[in-house]
Structure formats: structure tokens, C-alpha cells
Amino acid sequence: MRPKSRASRQADWSSRFEELQLEASDARLQRFYAGGMLQADTPIVNVPMLAMDFETTGLQVERDQIVSIGIVAFTLARVICRESAHWLLNPERSLDSDSVVIHSITHQEVAEAPTLDSILEQLLAAMTGRVVVAHYRHIERDFLVRALLQQLDEGINFPIIDTMALEKRILLQQQSRWQRWLGQPLPSLRLGDCRERYNLPHYQPHHAPTDALATAELLQAQIAWHFTEHTPVGELWY
Image (cartoon, rainbow, N blue to C red; front, side):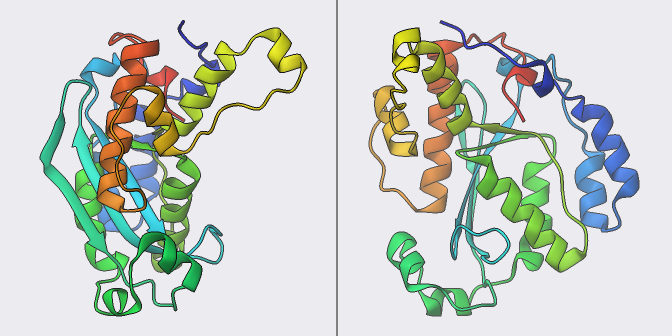
């Protein structure tokens, strides 16, 4: 059963990138936007993608910072391991003990790590010409926007395929009217639980490059089970 699309998701990101290139002040952002973006009607099978995962000092975008970035390039057909990368970052603030327990990144590791600004060119080069994929876009896109506003005084905008939101759409389509009337909650949308529904292997969570790989594989499975390779990317991105 193919989930319904929403017309509002069919954004013309190709034209938007042309506008953003003219508006950007930072040369790295200008180069990123100059790389362009695919048309919304491009079949997903023809879309180069970049799975991205962040570990942060917490979940409050206005207060917390990025401490780790993992990226994995992939297509619908394969994962391109040689184009993966992982950076530990110095958040320039103390780590909360709760976040250390979750991601196991230590104070000493981040103290010796580079800042986001020093690896930004590499990150943007990896993102150029690819559609970003994340499990819960409000971490990866929102935290990156906030970080760049703090460091460059300008944010960033790009389309993103959110595997968590996509899974929610799929599960809502599968719910019966009776289940909705009863207010039956949806199954867990955590990355590992979503993967389990597609018989994907268990990976240790909260390690940015591993979670990026897990997200790439999840999207491949979601497309194989619920969509087709001809599904326009505009039906999937935000």
C-alpha cells in the first residue's frame, strides 16, 4: 500500500537554490547552493543521497550544540562506504552528564576536537548535489541551521527526507478507522524499532556514522516495501 503524498511537499528546490546562492554571504554556502538541487519529479532511483546523523549535547536547539556528525553517501541501490565520514566537534561548552551516558563521547574527546566551522567546507562539499536523509529532521536540519546562524550569522536551507516522518505516514495509512477512533497509539518510531519492522539487523545506537548507515538502509527498505523506484523525490522530502 503506497502512502499518500502531499502537494505541499513538492517544493521547487531547484529554483530555491538559485535564489539562496544569490542571498548567501559565506563563500562555502554559495558553493553549496551553486551545486544545485534536483527537480521534484526526479525518480528516487536516480537521486544521489547523503544520510546524516548528529549527536548533540542535548535536544534543545536553542541551547545545545553538535558534538558529532556522521555521513554516509548512498543511492537506492547501494551504500557508498568510501564516501562516508565522521567528525567529533568541540561544542565550546560543557557536556551534560546525561548526554555523555547516551553517546559515550567524553569531555576530553570534544576538548581536543575541531569546531564546526573548521570542517564546514568538507561537510557542505559532501552535501552538494545530494538529498540529505535523516531520522527526525528537526535534529539534523534545525541544529545545523542554528549552528550556522551562531557562527556565520546566516543559516542554511535544503530538502531532507525524514525516515521517521515517512514511517509515521506509512503506519497511519495502515491503521484502520477503528484503531484511529479508539486513539490507538502508533508503534515506536525509534530508528532501531523502525528497522526491526523491515527485518534489518540491530546496530548499536547513538554513534553518528552507524546511525547514518542505519538511516540509509531504512530508507532503502521503506522504498522497497511501500513505494517504487519511480516515486518522485518530491513525494518524500520536506
